[in-house]
Image (tube, rainbow, N blue to C red; front, top):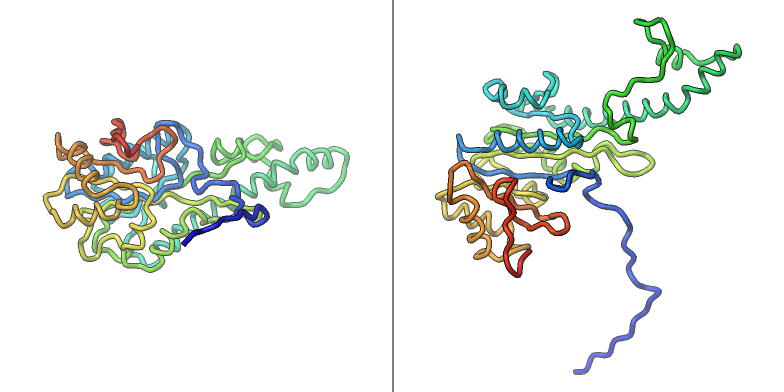
Length: 305
């Protein structure tokens, strides 16, 4: 049977400009916002790796607030203290309101950012009106008056990024939460699906949040739900002796590489030390490969990258 084609240009699909990864990051760091699933047995690299990654984002100006969800945060105090995590940002994974509190943090950050922009926009007019004797609202009087200096001054930004016209970049790390209520909470699954759209602006776009799930096993009961794994943009995988578990992990990457390719690159990344891991970036930047050994070694494969 012969097939004849005729193109109708008026019906051509037009791609709307924009990106799922709206945060600009340093060239050597993965895109944000991301959803990362990290699997490795106890005592290897999980918390150390994530705190290092978040610190690299902080040092390059692309991570402003880190939230930590864990029942063992106190035992990892030295690992997370250099991220400047505030006490109110340490959440309980067994708190039924944990995810709601997380979403509220993002929405409050959006509202604070919008209020700052509003106050900056009206500062000059308010000061001029007051100078010539016109009344100004109590909102502006309270917002602009600095009690410590007894002077009026422009609003002070909570983050330096506000001066650049962007809201805070936020992350939430779920550390050592295997078997805890938060992983089986349907709200967590919904958050994984919509994390880039949390804290939406009426004008378009959103604050969003990056999510990091750290567990000891890929397939354990009470572990990371498939709906969360299916929304992951990055994976971090440590050495495992469980062949079935590794097979399931390989199948999760089947959309980008064949299983035999995955096994090869996995062995290369993890063969030297139990603290090494395979980093899989499903949305790498231009010129970068799908895989890295840890964060600092690119793994290029002929015919794949």
